[in-house]
Length: 403
Figure 1 (spheres, one colour):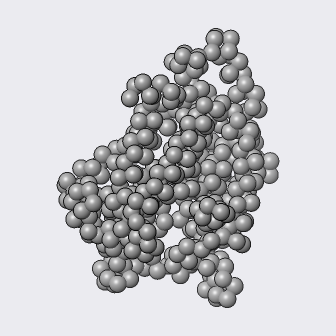
Figure 2 (cartoon, helix red, strand yellow; figure 1 turned 90 degrees about the vertical axis):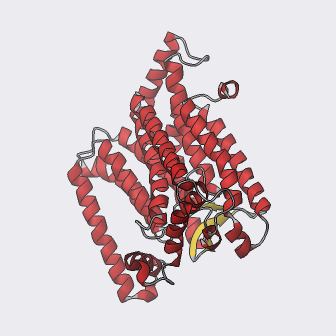
Figure 3 (cartoon, helix red, strand yellow; figure 1 turned 45 degrees about the vertical axis):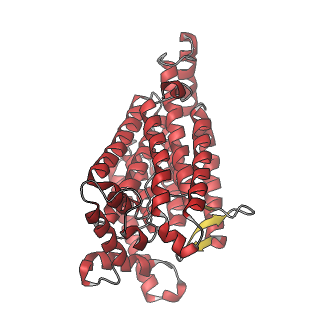
């Protein structure tokens, strides 16, 4: 293992956790896809090979990015933002609908789909981080400092919310967290939160009064999920997904039913994604689930540590945004499966079967590793470390692109 890790620069703990999760996902996805086979046909091996292909693409994207200088991410963040808007607009008008939600773009000729919001999440985190650095001396100024940062957040989250409320809400709160850490005045953030809640209430009111406008095409779905969660066992048919998810966790016990021996996974829609945690606990048990939580916590700690150690504010904000995003997605998946949150579409990072979600998660980790790689070179912890003159040059370069 040590011999192979020498080719992987950056934080070794993050590399080990990431590679272990990617390898384990092959086992779990193969075990959790019977429901998909029933619905869409095919065989578990076909889905396994498809998932393996995504892992290969994701790994090479992560490997390629972790060798890059983080200053390039700063420079391309603006273009990434406009590409995200273009993808979201294309999805809005021409997106492929799955489960009544038009979130996907179908890639021609290969038959694969890409969820544009997965790219938009990272693009927005990079954009907000860049703008915070550029506007750091103007944050008290509404016109020159605050609104130029908030407008990209409103645009991206507004384009996502129509078909994916949970992703838009999570992304919005992560951006506010970055702004709070970036010393944006709390009073301004409070006004934005209050204004956002009032605006959402207004849109919901208009939707109820004039449903023919179809302002929120998935509003009834959101409402039903909240109502079903509150009713619990009072409406077993409407709440079957959540109840089966909780029953799967109960069946798992301490050590689990064993790989491939879970029964409830055959009755859980997207047991390999949205209800991954339930399927995981049923087959591997509560002890394994505790280990899984600890791995995500270690991953968050290491990413935050890299961000805090960085001399670049941009890198710090990016690490915070990526770390919180990964942990939030994992936490929401667990909370949904345990019945604490209403059912929503957040899968387990690095573990659930997926295409764009898996690839973009590895891209995010690749960016973090790029920052860690730069720090290790500056500290002389890797063989290709620069000389003392080059170290000063690296620091000056980052001071330059932040100004």
